[in-house]
Length: 251
Image (cartoon, rainbow, N blue to C red; front, side, top):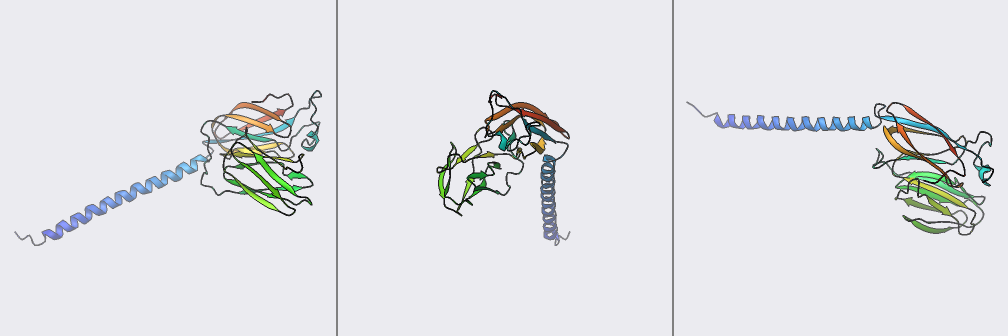
């Protein structure tokens, strides 16, 4: 029998086996990629997430009048409250976009006020402080996670990165050493489910993973706060009617 083609047969069999192995690896890599995309899409799917909406209102207490309330309450009759901060929390709660690019918020100093007075950002975001007043100002905080004290001449600016999240309970209180009535609060979260209310007192949080949460609403300027447990149902909107008043107990 003539075996002159035997080496050729062995070579072709080896190549065939190698091609099959590479094809199998490619198939599994493709399937892992598809599953990864499916999981990312599922994170924001109506089948796994819901929404939270509501209105924050202030209920006056004649025994404990809020002297500065007129700056935040649109109507004493209806009570819609501006610059209230709302957020949810539970153990292990993280955002689905941990690789997102940090953003920069702006806080100005004008007419001896911080504007806006209250902001909420994500951990890793930056705040650019401006001084558009005709006087020298200062930005200062003494926070357990981060401290700074920077004087700002007229027209000056200073940018600070806030890497550590203090959540709803530990905002960064900003003041000015030269003008003690000036104050601002920066709330830093490690997830995207928070809001600062506008003049109408309304808030809306979308794409919230279904489940049970602790819901907090606070107003730092009035030392107002409330906490309750809520349930988010996939594909549904949880509507809340939150009333804050001076006698509301702290968490």
